[in-house]
Length: 452
Ligand SMILES: Cc1cc2nc3c(=O)[nH]c(=O)nc-3n(C[C@H](O)[C@H](O)[C@H](O)COP(=O)(O)OP(=O)(O)OC[C@H]3O[C@@H](n4cnc5c(N)ncnc54)[C@H](O)[C@@H]3O)c2cc1C
Figure 1 (cartoon, rainbow, N blue to C red):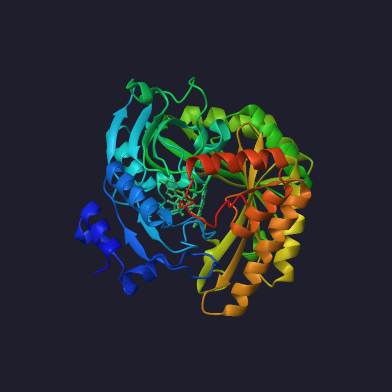
Figure 2 (cartoon, helix red, strand yellow):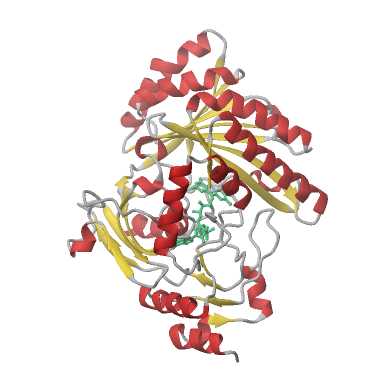
């Protein structure tokens, strides 16, 4: 047994370390188009102290450390591009505190969204957190590390805007707390201390998030989805503007997809509403339909697709298997809502060029302050040609987004480089200083957000 394996076993216990090919294999891949990247070791710590000791060891040995949550971010972000230790955080999945009146929950960052939702369902059914549309195994820490968004994006913004405090293990091993918890004053707020939030959106390059206080929001007894359909994509920004003015929805998503064929070239606006009573739901529906959407029906440019469909959370997309073989990856971008028509048109052209059924989706963030727009490219894992097409389509989409004036969300290394090439040089310099200050040995998720 080599000395690093032994040192890792001393930290986390024998059963929670591996350097065996058959186990490392699982960690060498993700679900997207990225080429496999092998770690040298995998360790699955149980506490922040163990994470800290692993990081100190990695600094001594000059080994890379790659945090891994659910491994569902698709863009190769948790693949060990430079080998080293994959730190699988899924054993750090405890719920530490639920404060109902203060509407927050404190969890270990490796906990899955599904486990948080199940706990709330049992112990505080009138509260919810904003759940991404990812499979339920996606972790809270992984989602924050990439600025994810969930099904409360319309009223409350990015999931990373819904954090009340954090504990992070820095790339040099210190365990730090941010927010009121740093004063020992519970986990009820992140503000108003000087802003030291250097961990969200960095894909684990500046530290490992180990604890999080998440804001909770009212969970009404019934959640339903209504669907409004238009043919003309140019109507979408205006309709979304009107719907965000009414402010009754929890999640507002516009989607267009080639499959199933009846939906091809149509734009479906999915409107999630919730209410504790029939009257509450009817009231909200009335404001939305009678107040805003009926005029489109009367002028013949829109129609109701469905009303009152029951919603299961999380609402996971079913678009992954359209080429058979189960592969898909998407480019996500944060763009103004007004970009929808162009994003749809140019994205569907890219799909067409690569022979992939198009799927595009825009989720409203905040009161129409932005939109997460995604272009999904399905491929067949067993057919290298379809993988190549998907990869090329992803790269073309990255370039298109930046050329249009959008920003990339959770970009893969290719997109990260495009972003950094275009970034204001002073900002880039600042990123470099922050990275070098926090991570002097460059051990944290190297290869990602590499500021030269
Ligand atoms: C079908 C499908 C639908 C999706 N829908 C959504 C959606 O609606 N909204 C959305 O936001 N995302 C969505 N995603 C993308 C992604 O799955 C989620 O964002 C997910 O929450 C990522 O979490 P994870 O635990 O899988 O992260 P991982 O993939 O494990 O990690 C993501 C990045 O964060 C780093 N990291 C992981 N844990 C930590 C930590 N504790 N501290 C520091 N860095 C860390 C990793 O190194 C990596 O760089 C979807 C994905 C799929 C497959």
